[in-house]
Length: 290
Image (cartoon, rainbow, N blue to C red; front, side, top):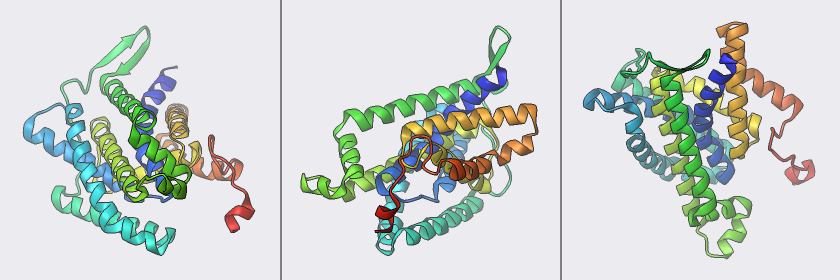
């Protein structure tokens, strides 16, 4: 039970970390391979702010999210928008190249040694009977769930959310009723990057990170998105919780080394057994070929 509860706490943070990747794919139908590099950039930005000001890392989440929102806007305007003319392959290669550039910039600024953000409560925990809840995990999961709830409200209770859902379902129809699909794409992409940066701020407290940690996180994000169903935010939440529990159970009853390989095993098994994911919809092959 301790391992399952810890896995659920980790899965809540994983859900936020993958929500940006899911949102961008759901709206624009592109795989943003800068995801891991952006998440690490959010972690390093949190480290810099906390070191310079002494603020609690969870307090910096709005600032980190705002900075990463602006970065997402620049990435879309300067890279993605231009690459879209060359098709999906060009977008994937462009975002992969940009991820390498961001990793190099991170190394130049912060170096290659591991960093972590320590707090006064990093070694404390809550107890409920025989169960132990690490304080940082509880706070991190709570912040992640609050941000996911805010995203749900945004997508279901605001004009922007309705525009995003309309542009996702039928871009041509959305244009006919006056929705500027290109602006919606920019907003969705920037919001997705901001959510990823916010997840980086939380993960900076939970585990050490280096500039090349993005390679691990892009693999984890893709595993969650594939497991939940490409473009499904609800599926990403369920997939993140399942993967979090699977990782902790593997580390507890098996080996931590096998836990690291778990996301990639999930990708392979999902593609073999249910390619559309938990909440994905199977697309007719004749429609795809057409």
